[in-house]
Length: 79
Image 1 (cartoon, rainbow, N blue to C red):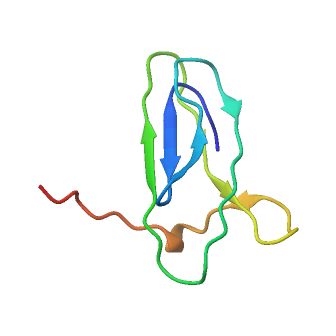
Image 2: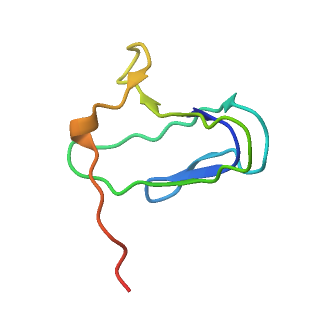
């Protein structure tokens, strides 16, 4: 993940934590996932200046690349 301002990404557990207000910073974390659907939460805030957010993934020793948009969908939180 590469972005400015604060964020936390989770997939059942904390994977990347780069919380706080700052310019764009790339942080990495890894989690092994089996094939299938996995919930992921990305918390992002923007204080000022230009916004930046880049979410990437890789398989095995492949190069990093953008998460395919077809892999992502949104569900509203249950209240």
